[in-house]
Image (tube, rainbow, N blue to C red):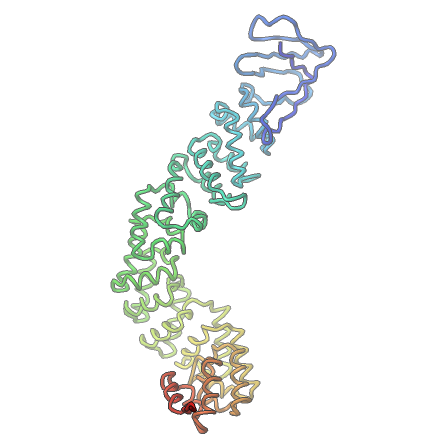
Length: 518
């Protein structure tokens, strides 16, 4: 007969995460304890021990611990676990070993009786699968506490098997642990059915196998795959094929989160109509900034209506600006668009001037005023620009394409070469881009101008565009060619502003003809 469990028994949880289990109890028999040689005549056995302790054990298909009164230490299980089966008791120990408190473990078993009815080995294998996919520690405990069904649901078992077979080493999971945990916590089990088929469908639709983890880990898996049917996914990709298709998805996987009929189609059609039906131009906008599809049609409409009414731009002009700078829609209408357009209008800009500036310097609409534009505006005013003048507006557009530090370095460079603020202002009015060029490149050109070409710095005042030409491909090459072929007396303006075709033609005419001797 099985040995009795005495009041002095020792409780030793087994290492269920590492082994195949074992006896839950490891009783130590005292010398005074003995077992009867005869078999019990009923399914229960009662034994009285010292100190008046009474232990009743029932043996049947399941082990039931009924009551142990007058113990000096707390009982192993509270009342809600007293009717636990073998599987329930094993699970309780397993949960304790994983890090659950006794109260949490008891609540799991009490509130989810299906756990106790499921094979223990199956649950333990499910936990092992989650661990192998990177879900461990506190994340695993939180997952089981929020969604206990992950330990027994057949759909999740199928999903875990698929992901385990798809894993390429311990650190190369198809779905990263945090993303997988979010999926299992947020998604109803019924929506996980067919997940594997939908992942394979993405491959069939053209997503490269090596980029599949990038897609799966940058979408809301519930929205992108689980609640969509295979037909809906196919229909979405077929529509997107007109505007970049899989390439668009790879650039912005979150596009798969959207609903085709209520979100994607209306948003793309708005941009398409604004472009005058130009699918190629619309595709260019989407590829430049796929995130633009995150904005609603109402958001698009508000921005476009503002630029029509307040800036006086046409739809064609607005789309051309969007084509250059799709992030226009990310600029707040109240905090950025309104004050910037108002500034330009105060500088005397009409709608045509506003369009020309924005097509060249669209960043003017989105740069921070406090951290960027205010500092640059201060520098322009210091070197002599006047408030509310067109020259100031043009200069602000130009300096949007450089950093505050580089702009400061450019001004310091000019001053170090002996130019005055008035000279810098004159160059800026003549060639506004002069303040946006890289200061290191400008120093190289100024050194060459004064040392190699033998010119005075002030000669540049008449032709500040000289500082915008490439050093090796234009300045150095043309000066050397001019010295050998074109003769003296050619101004730097004519030398460097001449078109490449015309310069090459002159070069060919002036080049000496070499006659081979026989």
